[in-house]
Length: 441
Image (cartoon, rainbow, N blue to C red):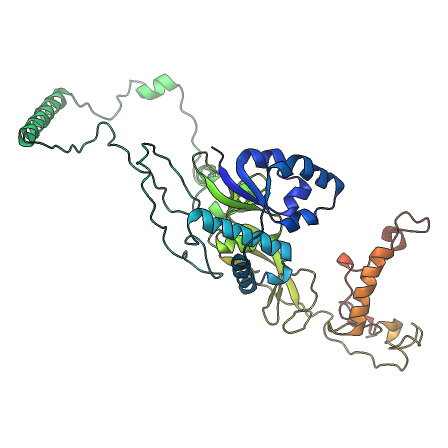
């Protein structure tokens, strides 16, 4: 029997071919996706691979409106709705729908982000001993597996007697137990208990040392403690070992367990929603992911969390105070942000006098040498997101990407021209860190 019953595929694993199609088919009984995933695959090799290898084993299904509505409401509460596409929401809704169908409801899932306990208890099931077979099915997320007991194991201490001669048989069993106890006590009395201390020879060596040879030198003091603690995993350093091991957040699926429904995706927002709901998430190596770690943006002024890492201004307060912080989501659906212990905000380059506006500088009629302070540093100064300078810079960024031709004879890379620009091609916010250094002291 295959370890996974149903796998829901996203477009990312199909495009990367990780895991391979043969591995997915060998490990799962059913492979399901939504129709919009196939329309996203435009690469020729990927489409050829899907048509020839995956499509004969692929089931295409659309989620119900009720499932889609639940996923949309959950993503809005968790803050991931703004970075999820329509296809992503359909994949999440289909995984949620199949989980409810196979497990008899959403009793092992969560309805809101941060919910500590599950929605309910496991529904009652009919006994599997009616057909004379005992089948062990372990659903991921249960506390203990349920195994129907077919018969009493041999050599059991408890014996149940029925019939008219029950008392006689009980007396016989009691006499047998007493006689067995007497024999055991007699045998124990014949034993001769010797002294536990080993006898030493005239040279001062014990018998154990005579057979094993000369004793090894034992480290003393701090060397002994360091040698004992080094390389061992203890409750005090288990977190450090898990952080060093990249596969510590993954748990392999045991051979005797069956994973009902699982989703494979490379999108962090989808992974975050899956773990917070309580759905099963698989890695490209088909191991169950217990927790994920990534980075988001957090406003240092109003503490707003932003999942879109391309933002430069906070959507709540409008200030350019977004900082990159690490975050994690564990198997219990708990979302945590890991901040620095003594983080200090650097105000370098934030306090300066803005140059007075010069007539004609807004529409570009005045040359670059006039206006905007010494050297024109105040021209095209961006301080807020709704400025036309910022919008113009963002539009020029997208236009420069499309207009750049690497095969042009006159094209020179930025390494030779010296025009490095901002990291990621984003426009510069403010006057920069070295703005106060331009003043003559």
